[in-house]
Image 1 (cartoon, rainbow, N blue to C red):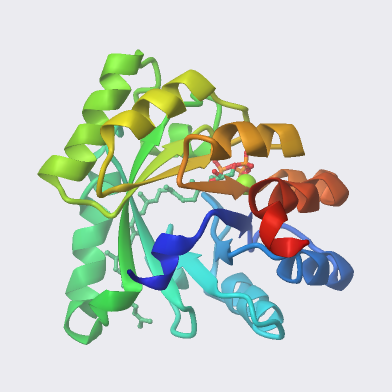
Image 2 (cartoon, rainbow, N blue to C red):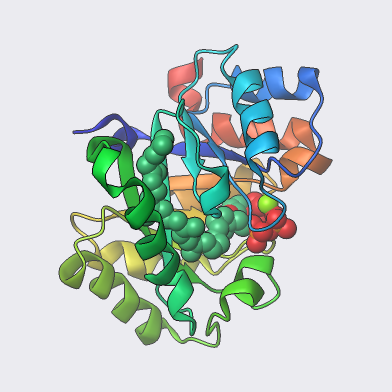
Length: 232
Ligand SMILES: CC(C)=CCC/C(C)=C/CC/C(C)=C/CC/C(C)=C/CC/C(C)=C/CC/C(C)=C/CC/C(C)=C/COP(=O)(O)OP(=O)(O)O
Ligand SMILES: O=P(O)(O)OC[C@@H](O)CO
Ligand SMILES: [Mg+2]
């Protein structure tokens, strides 16, 4: 199995947000499996490179989640490529991807490029608004996207994205029950150890983002919730 398929806990750092050196050290040395660098807006080549260089002082693996063709740079362990399955705009499903492959297709190392099927469920999130995602979905709708990701498109990752708000653990549980090969990644609103434990009971991988910027101590505890036995 590729390394990323073992990951249970990820921190997502936004290149468009400030983070002190002390906070970055705490995140990188927390025992998390990897750092994702990514965000919906304000991601540039400059702020991506600046964050990459700072993270590379530590041994933790580092992934670029591509949201902007102009910010792609070598130096990451993996490149996660979102496609928003419930977007109503072709550019966020295949359009930008097509443009990127025209530029980079011939020189890509496909072992490092990992497609993610996103299902965005918080209509207030910037990612929902940017991509014009249809978020008013019931459980059957979400399960259909999960099955589409695994069986039609053979995507290695299905990402249940509630960015900015804590999601419905029952939906995460039901999605986990229909996926076999495709990894289930959950992200959104995890702010406490208990929430991390709850979502990690069903998702293969949990992603913790915004709480890093307003409650670092609680953010660090989410690692212990998932990997406590390995850290002690
Ligand atoms: C030279 C070199 C190293 C080449 C490497 C090869 C390579 C990686 C080539 C690229 C191949 C490729 C197919 C690229 C795709 C290009 C692209 C721009 C695709 C579109 C991706 C997409 C659907 C973006 C939409 C936004 C999105 C899903 C972003 C992910 C991050 C996210 C969901 C953040 C959520 O936070 P947000 O809602 O913004 O909330 P806050 O910021 O408020 O926290
Ligand atoms: O920022 P939060 O709400 O923790 O969400 C994490 C991640 O899923 C965002 O893409
Ligand atoms: Mg964020």
